[in-house]
Image 1: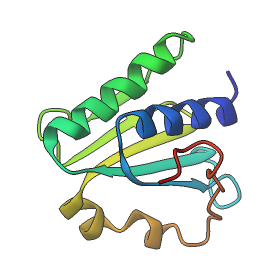
Image 2: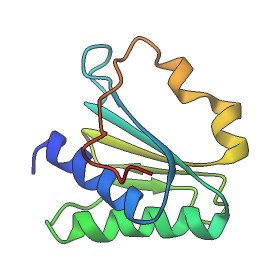
Image 3: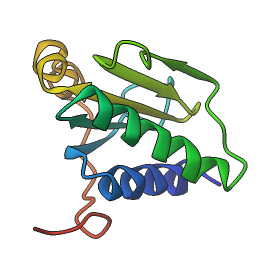
Image 4: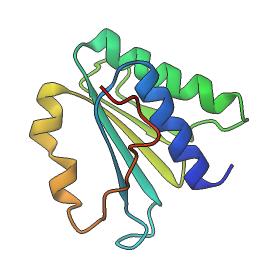
Length: 119
């Protein structure tokens, strides 16, 4: 899978677990660290863990596994590193505190409207 396909799979997995406010930043033009940040939040630690486990399960079906994962035990900010795609699952509180979207405001937001359920 290429980074775009990984990103799309992550977004769909997040959406299937009712993740809140899913955003994708194309960071490839501002850093060589990765191509995409995929950001969302959950209402509870249980939901955050369910989101991250769903992401991991869906990508594992394609033989794609994270090279690193942090925060599962605290469920304050879960970070999953898929090399070219970095997944951030925040609690409501931590998303506002860390404000990743503002820190990376030079990176354009990707239109994911066709990947998520419209309510």
